[in-house]
Amino acid sequence: MQTGFMDKSAIERRTIRKVVWRLIPFLMVCYLLAFIDRGNVGMASLQMNQDLGMSAKVFGFGSSLFFISYFFCEVPSNLALQKYGARIWIARIMITWGIVSAATALVHNATTFYLLRFLLGAAEAGFFPGVLLYLSYWIPASYRARIVATFMVAIPAASFIGSPISALLLQMDGFWGLRGWHWLFILEGIPTVLLGVACLFLLTNKPENAKWLDDDERTWLVNALASGHKAPKKVPSLPLAQLFRNRYVLCLALVDTCASAAGSTLSVWQPQLLKSFGLSVMQTGLLNSVPYAVASVLMVYWGRRSDRLGERRWHTVVPMLLIGVGLFATSLSGSLLPTVCMLCAVLVGAYSFKGPFWALATDMLSNSAVAAGLATVNAIANLLGGGLMVNVYGWVKDATGSYALALMPLAILTLVSVATLLLLTRNGSASRLAGKTGTI
Image (tube, rainbow, N blue to C red; front, side, top):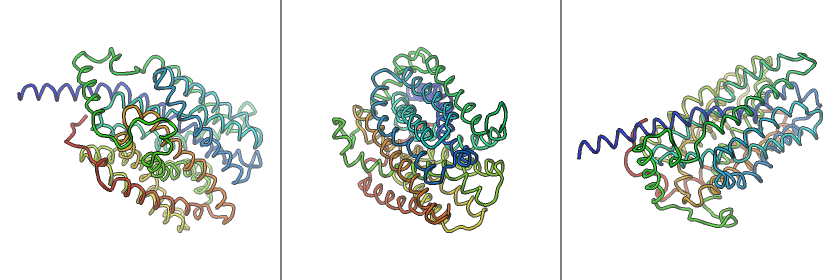
């Protein structure tokens, strides 16, 4: 008995380690490029807005169009991934968004800016929920928060790495007759296309097809995933129209809107907020990366802690409270150092939230509802958090003249989201996993 237990534990550790090292580093790089290509407009705006004569309101509206098209295309994209397989569909997503991102260098007025941002959202739609769905095919529930958190380090890492790189690319101003922001879009879009092609060779659709796993590893993983599907779910199999009206799905979307709004708004507006303190472009790029560096480290720790304790509810609520406190404090700050510290708090909360939250959301959805359910939650959150709140920030900034005060609506949204999550999980049935988990 003891020997069998040890053998099973050894197989588990070996299998999870193989899966993680095979999939996660590559997917992280893909997601890193997604957020660089999505958010580099924030750094480009330091030159582009003046060149094109765009006001804060115009820039905010154009930036938000990404999330409008993302909303309409996300659920169909995830259903297509379920039908055609992750290998082909994730490759399609990356190749098309890389091309559109590079083509943003062709923007010459507000109308073309609106068009390219809209097309970028349509092209990228489905990548994140598609990867979440893909990971649910490979990662047992007891490992999910730490794996999702590790994968999603790519979001803060995109700004940590992308901001200084984008600042350097802006220094190419005048090379071959192009402005720096032209080079920024071109040189940050091309690698995405190349990685999209690589997806066709590196991704395997499901464990049953994984020739790189040994027979015993493949059998263990298939059985572990099947046992997780037997647990009771809050959201049963539902037609798509009913899924959009399901109270659990809608509440999860509102909760995710909190972190989505904080992350999306700061990715677009934070460079301008920091530059308002009199910094140069290069200083802005370097300082903009600091909060993301802090968030990158702490979000992995928080996801592992959630898995180790088997707890989801409070590991989601605490980061949300940190977002709210940080936003309120930033809106009242008038100097650079406190502002940077509070922005660190906001982004640590926004990204530490993601591992436990998406593990909790996946656990609530039945196997047949998970593809459309995850896409629905993410689509609504992106529409409200990115599409609406990025605009709200621009409106408030134009009305008050203050980059900091424009954060106040986000702070209020956070309080509403915290209350929603506490009510949604008040019986605790979906917030805690049974049993202990191993380590990778």
